[in-house]
Image (cartoon, rainbow, N blue to C red; front, side, top):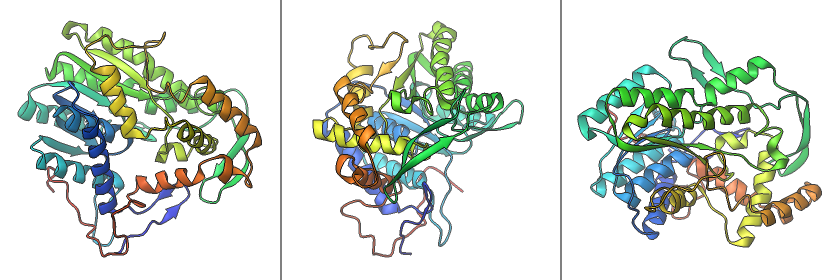
Length: 397
């Protein structure tokens, strides 16, 4: 079939397997270009199919020759219907890893469930014995709690008062005002259950109880802080409350696993175009201005650049891992530079529909959004008939 992008709001309903494969190849080439990292050798990535999770799997494998197991929840293809991009990303990753002589297997299912945790443990026991790095990078809007059976849904809302500010429809470039009503206590609780640290702690407890965590293992979860202009809807909103919980959980995990010397960290990463960030009002306008500013300064990074720098310059240097006063690794340091943020504040005040293409990088935003789904890559013939029925080698029907 000929596969074209079909948009519905901030979601693309199609994905291109050849484009996703090209994206994975590009990321692998970048990691290789930066040289070897004396890093992990047996890695579990929970949320491994897109974004920072995929970048973590690629960096582990092609930066440190690590064996990797990836866990994710993606829709497989059907005749005449494409899979989700994460499915195609994972298929491409496994093929590239196997061609390079690297171990790579994947599990497709609900990572919040006890069943997938057990399936993962069984696979580690059978093939790897133990893992020395666990990446936790889930980005789901809903969670079925494995103990209570209750389905919890997260929300994107401010806390305490109504929020009004600028936003942009990145498809049209129209800058407008958006107003979001505040969350209630139930909204806050649900968002923390979905996006907080409880499931991360459950994973680490299960892995430890099963004896599949290596002595001195490390676990990393990803977070975001961001600037003042987005904090009401993000860091001081419902998502921020969940991120506070996630960050507190790192200390709890480290304490609970001190008998094996396992340490848990939260890495605060840079704002990037993702399916999740595209859904948050205000964030697309901020990212557009951020991209323009950081590109002009020569310090723009995507997911793979961020994670390669995290591994190569923070986690695996042979020195103590540098953290801020709250114990977090700050790989958002370039984004949060005072000069960068001052420029964005000034641009924010003047941003309009008419001048956004000039003062912001809306084109770059759109390009990155298309790239998420395998579209817009050089070297891919998007007019050609493409086989949508791409399998993931390690996943058997």
